Image 1 (cartoon, one colour):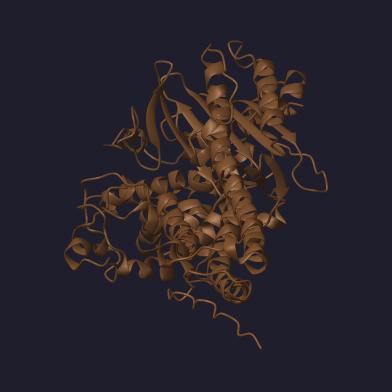
Image 2: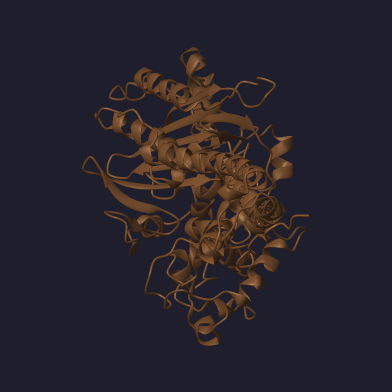
Length: 540
């Protein structure tokens, strides 16, 4: 059901000054007009969204579309929580890394107020700020942070993704922890997406404005835009009716509450409704203007969205809190955001004055990590429909299925090998001639399985975090259906490897006396010495 502002139903009944007054009121609130742009088939867009929700098993979704200074469509789909509460355009969602665009906007506002110089070193505003290398600490600029070319790595930005400091000083504590962070590229040389850049920018906002990051965003962005269902903390969002989040187990969502990262708010901690995000998006095609004022200058809005540095990904550049690319020959300025149990996407089409926001109360990390990016694909599909193209249905990457099969297959193979080993040990006890003899064969049957078990466990524990560039705690939260089987496999390997060796030795020793007493001769014992030849029995 599309929400229609009541002013549209009553203004024809009014005249004179009353009509003028109500027109002014309408300008200050985003009206949703059913016929505001006949080139957009909103019904087809809704059908597409519903079909993707069904295909991806998404519990709830909110959609907002703006064109120029108009909000042309707001819609809620599905359920907001396990109680079955319906998603509406005013239901808040966590927006993840879409938050970075708000942080970049705050920095640009402070620049235009003469309080921040983008080319100045970070230490002008945070004298205590540093990374492991003292020289680099003095050269990282505010602009380097905005463009993600400071040298701080993705792994550093994910290091405390699932845990961190609490309390009022959580952000500063988080940023001070960077003093031990090693830069993985020279300052200004290489784009590396890192939350750590935007944690630091949040501290710059605080230092330059004299307000906490949360208060600044509330007073200088949320309040002027009338974002009444937007929040800077989990506590506020909970009171405002934020959706419950879901994580996926083998493609099916399950409700999962995850801890709120107080120290990471400037990089990914804001929440807002589709209606509020539509208010926010209107500022971009309107060069910083909103109905009752200006959030940023035209030049400032342009600089925010201009491609700043290449990302190394085909056709994608990074602006300030935005990614710049091309889709179907149309320039896109976009960003997605993923928490462990929610997802959001914002796409601007600057040349056509369109803006799209899609928010889901679930996150399918395997799809995102292995390249399918199905949730991101929904916003792309809506943008395609707005520009007269067909929206291609998304599909799970074959890599995801292969990885699932490999992990499950490894656990299953371990169980089979365990059972086979126990049966072999029993045979060694009861039928000693079947047991391995000689140092080479015995060492092969005992040493290789031990090394394989321990080696596999250590490889998984060390290499998986490196591959996803996040600690195991974050892997468990983001990829539970892969993480738990892998961890179970590691535990099984670490326990079974040594235990199997002990059981094998005991079985070999237990079988030797039986072999000797049965008259078996000329066999090597487990210790590697030849068995004594049987003595001839004496006769009376």
